[in-house]
Length: 84
Image (cartoon, rainbow, N blue to C red; front, side):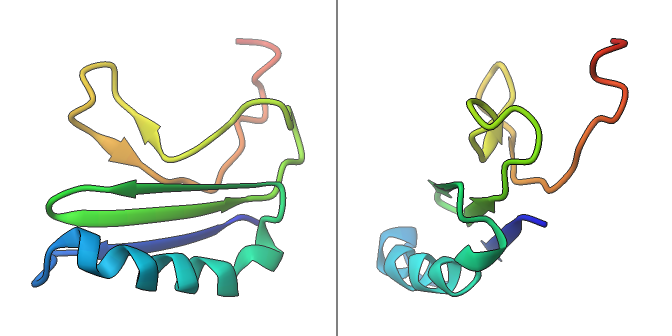
């Protein structure tokens, strides 16, 4: 299972908290040792530690919508991915 760290409704500037979130993410790296990613925005910071079970070459996170307005860190799998 992957690991996700999220900090929302920031009271400080995100660049001040980024190093703390990275330290938190390191603490759960054993849950997802295959890839690490972080998003730092004005209102939130998301970090993701990925355990690659299917398709280890791709799947980097956090994920972004096409217009880059939405950001998502997720632990999940689409079981019928070959059918669709």
